[in-house]
Structures are given as C-alpha cells and as structure tokens.
Image 1 (spheres, rainbow, N blue to C red):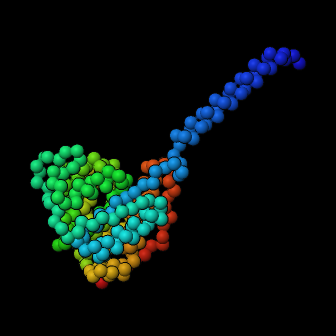
Image 2 (image 1 turned 90 degrees about the vertical axis):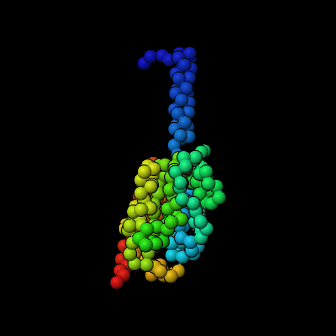
Image 3 (image 1 turned 120 degrees about the vertical axis):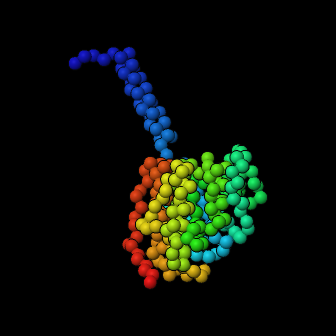
Length: 244
C-alpha cells in the first residue's frame, strides 16, 4: 500500500472541500433561479362587467369565476362599465404612452389596471345579438391605445342572454383578443349563461359550472406560465341544464 504523506493528505482534503463548496454554491444558485411558491408574485385577473346593471346576471357569472380564481390563489378585481357613456374610437391616431386621447371616461383607468394584471375576463349581456355598445367601445380603444398592456395575457369572454344571440356576442367579444396574441382560455362549453331578471342565472347550473371550469383553466395557465410546474385542474362532474 502506498504511503500518504502529510502534505499529500492536506492537498486531497483541500480539493474535496473545494469541490463540495462549488457543488453547494451551484445548488444554491439553481435554487435561487427556480420559481417557488414562496417567492412567486401573486397574480391577478381583471374582470370587466360590460352590463349597465351593477348586480345583474352578468355580474353573477363573473363573480362565480372570480371566486374560483381566488380558490386557486389568483387575485381578482371586478370593474363595471356602468351606465355612463363610453366614447367610441374615432381613429384619430393620437394614442400616446399607452393611453387614449379621450380621458373623460373609464378607458384609460382600465388600461392602467391591466398593466398590473396578468389576465382578463370580459362579460356582457346580449343586446340584439351583440355585446353592449359600451363594452365594444371600451375594448376597441383599449386594443388601440393600450394593446401593449394586453398582449400575451390569457383572456376569456362571457355572455349572458335571455334566449338567443349569445354565441354571436361571444364570438364578437373574442375577435379583438385574437389579434393581440392573447391566449384564449376555454372551458367545458362556451362561456354562456341564461337569465333575464337579476338572479335568474342561478337556475343555470351548467352556466355557473362553466365559469368555474374556465377559471380553473385560467389559473392553471397563469401558474404554468409563472412556474412551469402547474398541476392539471381536477374536473367537476358535468352538469347539463336544458332550457325549453
């Protein structure tokens, strides 16, 4: 067996300690780079109620989605377009610094909110087969002036009707988002609810479930974008609500 001198032993110990230190520092660096639940920023979704009625069926659908997002650790805020006029885009080309030249309605305020949010849900009642004029004007101006605050963020549309026109309104709401590279969040069915008078939406159990599923999908997408390790949502047993 070869003799190991004191000098050789000290050198070998030194190399071992150095290697261990390098491995430890590398592990610490990887841990610092890896996203964790503890250091991840809490995400937030903005929900826009395009109905002039503050507490109608559209609000109830959005509320169901917001509640489910919160269960998934996502912050939420619901804002309403209200009954006040919202200007339409006049193609003036004067948009600057991600703001519309018209500053006398809610448009610029909502663009500012979207700069701090990670996702968007827009809801509207159905008026003659299309979304409300207020919400269309708002979305068009947001897209032109504040498109930078929207691009790349998951989005979903929601429509509520008494009987018909919901699918056409739903498609109309989604069209601008597809031109802004916004990932469309789907659900188990189209995001449609049925009800006329406030509270009637409670009878549409499938519509409310559709909101929960959509919210689960949005939360999954947001968490996946942030960490790359999101768990696939567990599904509720399907509900079918038929209207005749």
